[in-house]
Image (cartoon, rainbow, N blue to C red; front, side):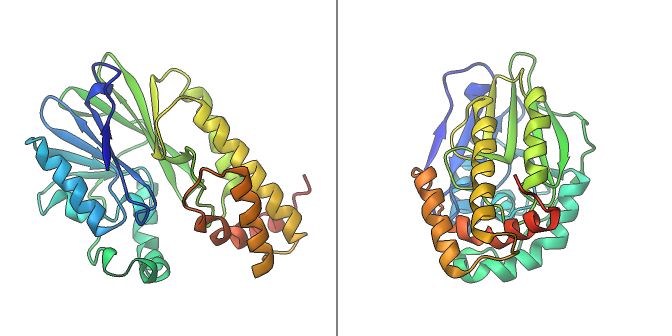
Length: 289
């Protein structure tokens, strides 16, 4: 399914949101129409969702100008190959995001491909252009500016500010999951919380915040993500009791507690998947809060 934001103008009326299937972990990809063509922000995880995203792009009958990547998780870049369809399109990321994609792609495939089978793209296409932190890139009269965050939800995150002289909006990748359970398996929740605090001030003057999962909104997205992470860490800390892993029974209890905390979340398998990573993180830092 896909939806178009129409209540704002002029930039926000030209932002199209593709929402992946549940198999694709409900990841958002965005198509932004400019005067010269379309810029994509992130792609999708599965082959089917990537093909549907490409079909949506084709329906505009306008060229794809670039693909911008927010971070190095496969549900945000796996589908680039299908999206660009062999065209020599700039695929742009910060140096840290590019490094993580290349370093972790094979490891992520080994871990996650068994769950997705032939829906996992055989060929993944990596960034071919590096954007500096704070460097503005112009496509069709619209400015796209990446801001580097370092480790957080992934091993290296960034967000993109997009402005056209009228509106200023932010595409934050997985800095916040709006209404969905979070992926914490990379084990950087302490840094993630720091990034939320740091970014809150920078995003105070944007008109709209577009997350990697869930509906667009305002600063409340960051507030809710902070509350989710704090609750998750509390539950893991209490269950792990300073150990670096949880038993299967403890993971089941964690899933029950977080599902009760966020009953609207649909990607519940992420809860137990990240339990050991967060338990290890908390044990290493020796937190007692």
